[in-house]
Image 1 (cartoon, one colour):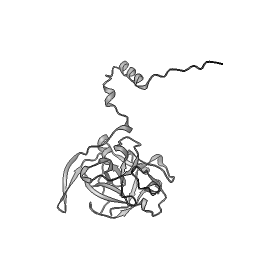
Image 2 (cartoon, helix red, strand yellow):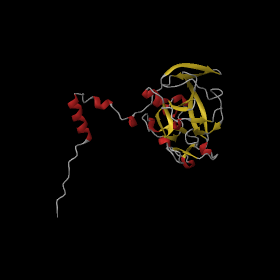
Image 3 (cartoon, helix red, strand yellow):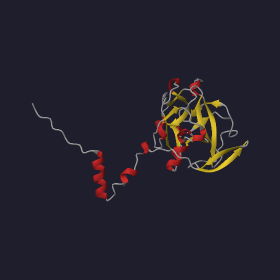
Image 4 (tube, one colour):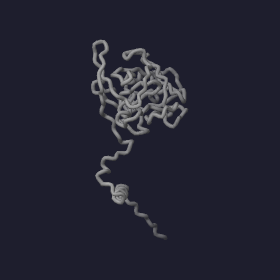
Length: 227
């Protein structure tokens, strides 16, 4: 019986270190280089304040924001749908789930509560576009970027809404015309990062994630709440 030969595989960390040494890059630089999928966007950068009805709200700089205004007023209420321009399908919490971590996807619009959302105003960007939580009517939980992700492809799910006073940036969204811009990821990366249907899917259960804003139709939404 023949003897199987095994090729030894060097650990990835050793190979990276060797390449960096050849290129003359200090090994310490490795520690500061996080993969995009592991980048965490937790801070919020406030540039001013606005007083509405005697209450003070923050104004923040959001990279890539445009001068739009979808909502009749910053404090407008009302529930409605998020309809993707490319697919014509509704953003929803999969299978009407109510647990933390339940996935957000798209599905043919059917009027169910899991496809309805409302907006809880937190503040606004430098162009007066409203920023706040997007809350699912069925579960009462927040549309969020899972685990404060900032990289392209970071997943969108639902989770218990943190108090607005805590400014959890992975649950704060800038309603910037047709774009639903992820506040934390955009500020962390210094560019516009938006909710999208991954891969231009037109199928039911097409996944919703975040990606750098290229103004593609799968990154645009009809925001039918808060009006």
